[in-house]
Image 1: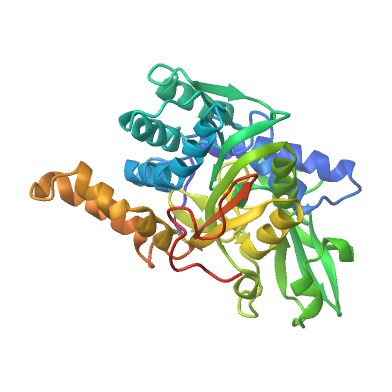
Image 2: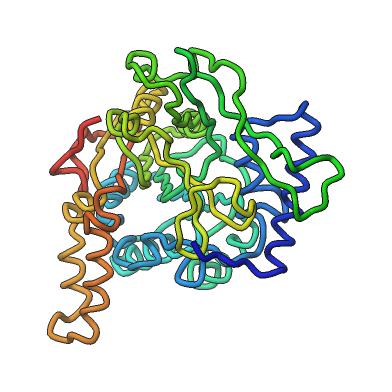
Length: 395
């Protein structure tokens, strides 16, 4: 793998490595992987999402669906229309809350489509942890969409639409491994060559075995199945806490979340024996989570069964779960393409068609990415909303 960060980038990474080193030393020589991932992604001014490096798009490390085509957001609007209509019938404000809005591309495409259809949105709130991404969102959205606002904590009460595109995968996870018939944490410690007085260019990290995982933290699937010694996977405690928090504040509305992942029988498959944690740098996959901390995005796939169980257990209703391809096709992305772009104009039509193919293709994003929708206080059942009326996926 030919990845050559600049001298400035490497220095930035080592500054963060020094901070992680200090945390490890302060915690008796080890920290949880969740703590490492949190610092690598969110340490103020140094973590991947907290520093100014360009992250999204062709010049960044990865590209998300809203950057690929504005029709992605326009298609999501078709799912939102019945919810908006219901809110309006009750004389309630039309409110949208988006988590982790990236460059603002999804918000822009959704608000543009709603505007085109003559639908007024009372507020479009964005909650994001990345200061530089917030700056990009504001420069993109503030002037054309005055209803866009930025918040730094969850509202106490909310009715409306909650969106989360590629949010769950970026939450710090715990790594766990099966050793001698028990599950133990896979913690992080300093590599042998790293010491308290080590020069900056020698700071590195490695895994070490930690304490036994409490049974209450283990998904039922891991308690019921047998695994080989050394089998490693993840537990996303933060994602479950997030779902519970959303359920607490949501009086009426939906939660629509899109991300890559699997139902539990695929997620914990015996062949996926080293988990799903992965880094991304300059559109290349990086297997080593300790590779240039602060420069690489770190993610893990979503256990959709666990998310569904948590949501239902917290009082939400499951309104749909399917692949991204099935979702977009059922919500009418093909009709939107034909409506918005002249198919007889090949120069204009082909780039849009190619972008949609990437969103739908099994070899690209169509199958790996899933869409899940929860509801609360609404007169809708599973399979009622556009996007979820055909080809539901089993959990």
